[in-house]
Length: 246
Image 1 (cartoon, rainbow, N blue to C red):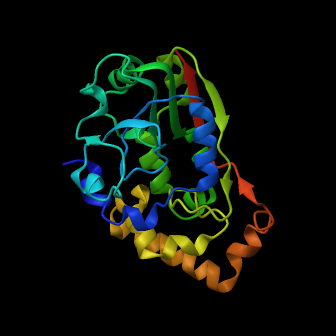
Image 2: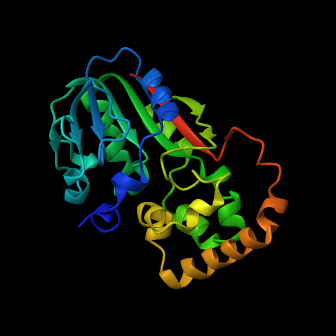
Image 3: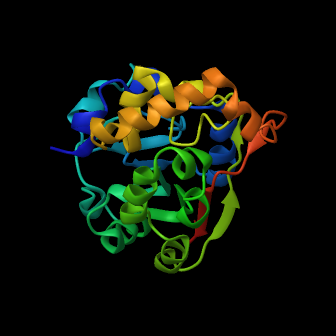
């Protein structure tokens, strides 16, 4: 059973692709006429040019909308695809779950003729995100154990351009730092179920952290402490897009 067989059941409700992130990923893919989407999940950010999607979780596959690209159930480390089958390969917020990073990256490079695009995060920056620093340090510790250093990805890709991915204040995709200016979002059970860092930690850890956040929101302490964020339209929480030309 994959992680997302356990935590992915509300994914379509909690993790709606944000059009601004989608635009940045589309630009990164360039003029690729065919794309392989690895770790495709429910199809977020999957371009019309997708030739085939690869996803190990049956729960996620079942949530793919009608008209999505054909999907095969497989692991990133062993793609059941021919060499150079597509112009580009993409992997969106998935590499931290791979059991063999080197094998997975080698597979992306094998099936793509021209380009590989990866969305991930820089833990050196994300570790200091206010939600982790002030309320849930256990979440930062979880990510410390699974996050992939950007330098390692660049090396395995044989070089890559690294682009910051600023998060809009009204981001529709409920990943870890999406609620940087809307802290009340972390109190929503649907959001919690679809956010891996909350869904994977024990409730005995998460519940007190959320109770402290709720209390700080009710008292106004959070808004006073983070008034510098309230006027921002976007925020760099450490998410990064890697673009490697082959």
